[in-house]
Amino acid sequence: MGYLLPSQRLPDLAAYLDAGGGTTLERCLEIGPEQVISEVRNARLRGRGGAGFPTGIKWQGLASAEGTRKFAVCNGAEGEPGTFKDRAIIRRNPYQVVEGLAAAAFAIGTQTAFIGVKEKFTEAIQRLETAAQELSAAGLLGDLEITIVRGPDDYLFGEEKGLLEVIEGNDPLPRLYPPYVQGLFEETGAGPHPALVNNVETLANIPHILERGADWFRAMGTTDSPGTMVCSFGGHTVADLVAEVELGTPLAALLDLAGGMRGGGRPRMILNGVSNPPLTSADLDVPVSFEGMRARGTALGSAGFTFLDDATCAVQVASSASAFLFRGSCGQCPSCKLGTTAITERFTALAIGGADTDDIEEIAAWTQRITDSNRCGLGAGQQALAAGVLERFTEDLAHHAAGGICDSEPFHVTTIADWDDSAGQFTYSRPVLEDAPGG
Ligand SMILES: Cc1cc2nc3c(=O)[nH]c(=O)nc-3n(C[C@H](O)[C@H](O)[C@H](O)COP(=O)(O)O)c2cc1C
Ligand code: SF4
Figure 1 (cartoon, rainbow, N blue to C red):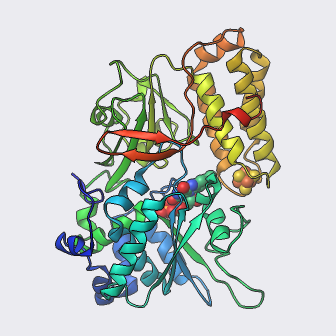
Figure 2 (spheres, rainbow, N blue to C red):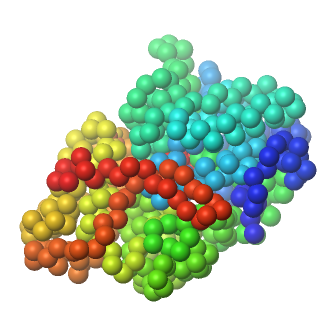
């Protein structure tokens, strides 16, 4: 099932029109911006970039915000380890993303839009460029101007304030104020220029909602998490997979879709990105939804699940995931940089057998103070990950604190570089462990 991820790539605009696409602008003009926002609000669509913020409310805020200029921005940076959903959506059907962006721009009252994509995502860039050109040439985007911005490999390029910095030609260092307060290309005395930032998958939902209505959308998923989610599953699963499921589907059913664990058995640790408390084998019944994950003390994030087998050492994985966050942290906020450094050092020392219970207490102490006065959510992500490992993998920690080490194959937490969908295989980017503190 699913409407976001067709089984085959749509080769061109003609195929998209044949599949019923291409009606978004017409529908927008027919009902007007207020009704567009009201339909998205009624659908109760929640952002698919990680935080699950209600999209209609965000659009409403931008539409009514003061601004001498406004901007609509699509976040296609996709840098969360274990996640490939946005690139899968763009590869299979970029038209719905571009039309969704056009509806967002229409709703907030702008004709200027940007799509931020990592420079190395060459296939996604090419698909988006072609889709935007074809839709525009067919008159299906009105006067909308779309610029595709090629960004760096940094994790912070995906953080919305870092993304806006890159669009302005700077490094992805998150600024102080959120996009609806400080948008793009502001100059002293020229008035505010707020920006709307939405994830690729969030925007891909919009043409379908406008075409088929909020009731259709809400009939799928759960009351608090309507619709579907495109999930990524990798690690020690039989297949690496990106698949669209209704929100509320149990995690165990997702594991079945990926063919189960290599060699059978149950996963020991399930990473949900790097910025959330990991799950354990006791959580396989958890509904994959915003509220379901929350009830288990974690979060849905961008639904990139890494299933790790029985031989996994949670301390080694925590050291690798923390190293990823340490490397991603830009250092503008002391508690984030100091915290990611200290936590990475201590998990790494535990993993290699040079630490004791004092180190566990130090990690616990950092999870209490790391979030203070941070510009973005990376520090809080480190806090959530470390606190989750401390709470859920006490046996592994005790083993290492007593001087034990593990001889299991280390699992390197890093981003997915590519997905060969016919072979069911991800390839991963270079791991970051070797130059991390303590590594
Ligand atoms: C460190 C960090 C990295 C992020 N990376 C991404 C990303 O790669 N893609 C994305 O859409 N959102 C990412 N986000 C979330 C964005 O800041 C933002 O909330 C999102 O793009 C909003 O879109 P949505 O409301 O449609 O979910 C990241 C957040 C943080 C703190
Ligand atoms: S919280 Fe961390 S990553 Fe985010 S701006 Fe501050 S130092 Fe940089």
